[in-house]
Image (cartoon, rainbow, N blue to C red; front, side, top):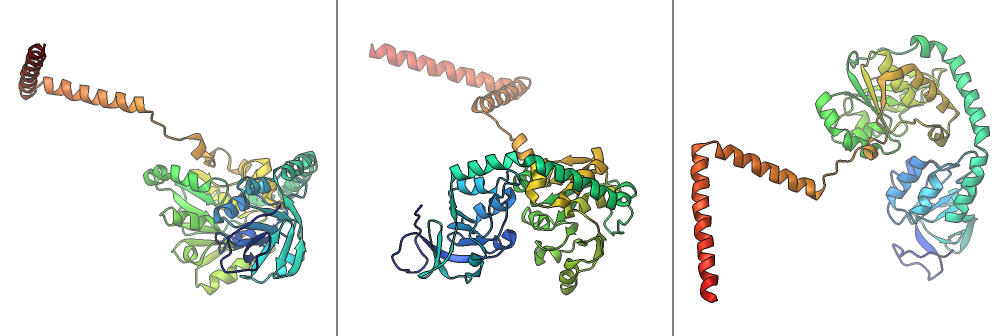
Length: 395
């Protein structure tokens, strides 16, 4: 497979694809500085859908993965999204590809990666056929993941029984949630589209806006300000953290919280919530425990494949958290696909005709309107008389 790309500066006339390299083992960190035409280097086992969509949005020249993009544990959707978008994906390059120097021009020729004339790493080029084959094999191994998921669910229930059943360990917060509706935003599937559709809801009901890590930035991008930010603070911007929202740092069950150091450096007041599971679970449990009337979730994980796609055994906690919150939780993920306002041309025409008829009836019921219709009728009679005379004379 040989690809070409116009380089940003002159390079030797050698076959393959050329571009400046951007290196980061964590995909979500890399996408913050990745630009169109860059060569992205990641170390991401089982590329998930959200990460793939973030990479596609950056429009890189190619994606070089030190790990296997599909390990066979479950049918992850990331590689298919990248390949379908026409972005070259080179797989299983090994740790040597991570040694490339940020910003240097590299060359990708098939599965070979060069820094100048030095061969740095060799991998496997993925295409539609190879991705489809890998997905088929992954579906066969899904039963093992189901058993692991069930075991993780029971383990979480044993460890967090008091939190789930009685709310033991939920910290006190200053944001009032009792009797109010809450909108929880996670940077997950279709969150941007769903936020656009939910704009009238936010305007009318004024829910409490809770951003889960990078979800706080999504709220800011939508033109609002988050009331609360929940998470381990690894993917939220300084702008969001200092916007005035209340900050709840998600800590490990042993009390250690890497995110605390960051918020303290920014001088942001915060509370700590130690809990097993994910930050979106913490946000839901917090809203439920503090008396939220309704919890609307955007971008959260709802299906089994999405849990596995997240790549964490702790995703089993989300399953039990949803059971705990119950009917007050409304999952808005995908609402943008469910509801699209469509008005056809004939409907618009009928609407105009109905409007004109309504105006006509209203005018006919008034003296001024009757006089206007009389003048219009006399004018049309004169016009038709003139037309008949014209054509009669021509004959």
